[in-house]
Length: 625
Image (cartoon, rainbow, N blue to C red; front, top):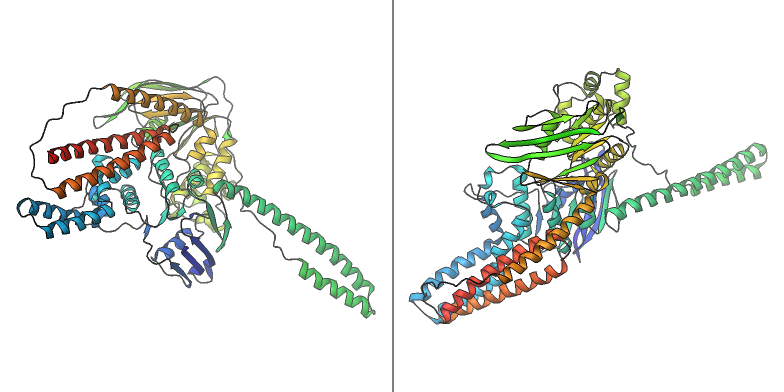
């Protein structure tokens, strides 16, 4: 069954330029599609057409009837007094209405027992179960914990949250609604690594249809099974994940290039023959006709256009010679803000040639530590010392220019202290060509500002490179270019990144910042993850054993409430639902025994369900007495 049918969509925002030019494809029920294309190719425009936010100039989009669709960028307007928790539970608004009716009937049954009330209650009970009411608390906590939405944030007014926080809450709401079709535009932008991995796992098991725009290549590998690439207003299709797409695209390019070259060689040979016949055939009609026939044949032979690749930026970091091992030494470094200690008594050393990934959840102090290293902040205690020949280049997460009113060309000339021709050549290597160099810096996007700052940095001779989220705001092509440039850098590298593809490629040492301390792991990011998984598994074994050995507390009996057979039956259904949920979790614990993050999450869920189960059993026993 087809869930989304896109038929001959044309869309332009300026006369004579179609950003989408007759795009046609179908998405079958249950497919997970990744939508790729460079920035400005029309991905988000197509999303908005599919969602009905804007109309196309030509063509149609047909959505399967009865299939609710959720778009992450569409955040509904909620009442002013709604907290984030209210927004999450809005996914269960129908179940909550049924629950309110059930509560009223329960109160009436205690004083006015009747068959009609029991029949009404029984119908509501079935509706509540069908709508997932018994699982509401469990599911809300499961999704909120998975996306790392803290309890403090859940209590805040939704209207006071930042744009990123609202997006995360809205994503959680869409998941809780169990929408049949999900349209996700950069869903990982405001998520930490753990939350991204949770979302990957959720999408991989999601039975509905998913269409995703993302620059996170690792996320695409885990989440999609087909790629649709938009280029020059047209669509190309690849039946596989991102890694398959990369290999297949190169194979298609080589195949098309060989076919083109073969056709051109044959056309050249025939053209030479036609030219000779034409020269010999002066006054000879037969030879002239043969010459014209060969030229007609050439037109039929040449069917393949010359394949082209997007012009890649050719640039590399300048490097200065470095003598000695000491790049940076930290002794007793501590830093606090508003009585919150980010880290204390850090003792670390960086040596020449190392490539260090600084990881940790948002808010743990990664960017603060980078600013201390750069001298933009001072520690509360301790000191930092760089080696005497260390020359640092720093790309911050938020790029700032002192004179945003200047053009790109002027900015390059002033900051890199180079000639206009050198500036233009350098900017061209970074895809700022033609009239682009006369744009004001203030008119650039976040990704373009990062690219311009890199352009300036790479003019300098450096041996210590610090990058804070270097791939943020960049499309896949730009991310790959940065990786190529960093690959050629032979100095010392320290970087903060949530881009696991980037981290996997470069980290030879990992600093994990958590709980005010840094765990220093010497090895690759994959080796670090494997080590953490083994530790978590061992901790889980110990915790399970302690729980078995712990003596059970005596349960104090609560005052015995009034009871009826219907209320007991209701509790029995709730207990059965919780027992089924617990069995499902135990099966998943076996399945994910080697995944420490998933195992931790499942154990927390198991404890929560157990607590609910004990409470319901206690109530059932009291009523049964």
